[in-house]
Image (cartoon, rainbow, N blue to C red; front, side):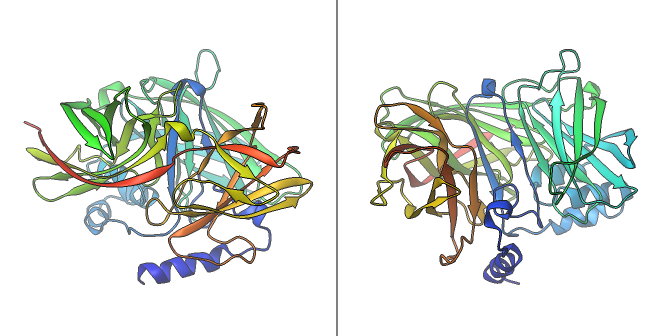
Amino acid sequence: MDRKQEYEVLIRELETPNLREKDSLRRAISRRRREQWLWRPSIGLVAACLTFVMLVNFNAGVAEACSKVPVLRELAAAVTFHRSLQVAVEHDYVQEVYEQQSQNGVTLTVEYLIADQKQLNMFYRVTDAKNRALEMQPSLLDVVSGEPLQGVVSQYDMDEDAELHFVRLDMGDLDVPAEVLLEMQAQVRGAEQDETAATFAIRLQVDPSKIAPVKVFELDRVLELDGQRLTLSRVEMYPTQVRLLVEDDAANTAWLRGLDFTLTTDTGAEFSTVRNGVTATGDAEVPKMVSFRADSPYFYEAEVLTLQVTGARWLEKSMQQVRVDLAAKVAELPEGVELVDVSVVDGSRRVVVRVQELQAGTLHEVFFRDYYDADGSEYRIGSMMATPRYEDLPINEGWFYQYFDLDGYEGNLVWLSPTYSHASTEDIKIEIELK
């Protein structure tokens, strides 16, 4: 099956008469994978990407290696769309745990951890004696204070029929604690009212002796991209991710919002920017990203890495807000974003835009949650939905729709806050000596 056929199959799978309930970033691809994002302000800005077309199949070499070990075979299936974790599993970089709790016929078992200094991946299975369709809602807490950890929590459900699922904790600039409290609510899916079947609280210990050390490579390379001056300061290589740290110049007219790059070993193994999960983190004061993520060649023997920057996304400092005339349906929006409809749904204005994919087969958010009226008063968007199909609007490969409601907003003019203004194509190569 080629990419176009895969795309058409996915569209058919996503067809549903209830777009509001089914086509959110969290639900639109629930038959392939589900993901939830919860983050804390101390991390600053977080950029995330979610693949919704099956573009990359599980690496055959990894599959062959892992199929010989029953424990690794199941883990390999769970991390199909996460290359760094694939390679970690292949190299047996896994901590085995067995923590189990049961309540009201529901049993939660946490079996494996894959951890480094900045990221913790927890693999679990759920069984229900009543055979209900359950949706798990995770939280990661500090074991002493009981407060949510200052990180991004995401849940991955690659296949509803799979037995093994996983939750990821990304700690930003902080280190993964030696012990975390995993709280998990089992919600009954499809219930007319919220129904919690069970609530669990499991303490998980991370073995520090099994945390591989970070590898740091200083770059201090000054580049000019799209007329903007940047410094690539260093590369941090962890078993589950690579972080490229970037500093900008105060004289720049745009903030760096996204960076596309690859890392290629001297033996030809190529690793690209993250396609499922956190892609970058940034400054809490201004909308710039400073740390960009890629899959990791940590376990590969190499003397030289080639870093190739292929593209960037920017937010012009003069474009922090964009004006939308809701009555006339006219707007000046970011490059590759088109206003296609403004309507009233359940008493609120709904804005629908058509968005060109930044990476093939991925969804992304176009606007921040804050928006303003003519007096500068701030309002908040409750939720944003993204889907390849919206009502009777045409389906176009390489594009998707994003829509949101301006609950309670009465004005005809609104100022939205875009996450980027335009993109640029680059071709810059830098060799990194590893030894």
